[in-house]
Image (cartoon, rainbow, N blue to C red; front, side):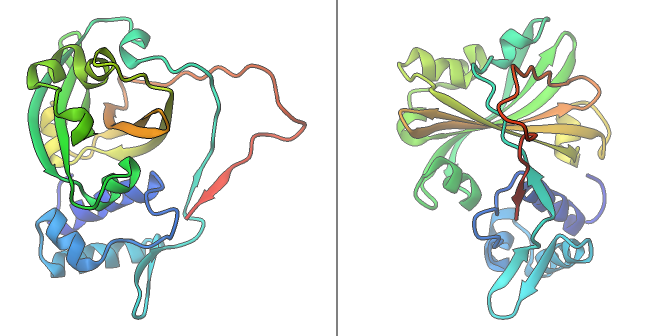
Length: 247
């Protein structure tokens, strides 16, 4: 996203709030941790947080830090049965191009989702998938080292991280998916060959195998190139499906 760095950081934090990353305690990471992780100054972090405060998304508690304001985001749980891998749901061939493959310390929010020790190493794979000649989505995938170490860069590109894990004997029992709207940052816009600020659909998928998180992927789809179709069978009760508040 164009604009000063504090605005870019504010946009990244808005994504995390919308995805419910801070739902359990409502507490954001400390200003020092945010500065370290994003490679910016404490002044930049403070300006980003104040921007979010002015938007009514977060509030400061004296001596305790910054917290998400109750009721600013909501999530709806849907039980849909079998998960269809994205490749089988797209009618044109997908080509994946890996642009980054590295082992990095786990960011706090990713570590929580993958139940990994803080700052333990994870495999991080960044890629862009093309449907036809044009980009469809920019993808970032995270895998704990014990599962990700056997996955080569070539395998991450074809057949892909999740399919490689399956071929290595890991059966995915459950996929938890979250969807929210966002906008293309400068770096994502370059990958997707579009303009900063272009509307995107952010889809996060967490794979569970034998009651343990196996892999996490975040897909940033071009909003004008992708939609999700959901089919419901029956109606479980007289009341409509509940909407749960995400703090």
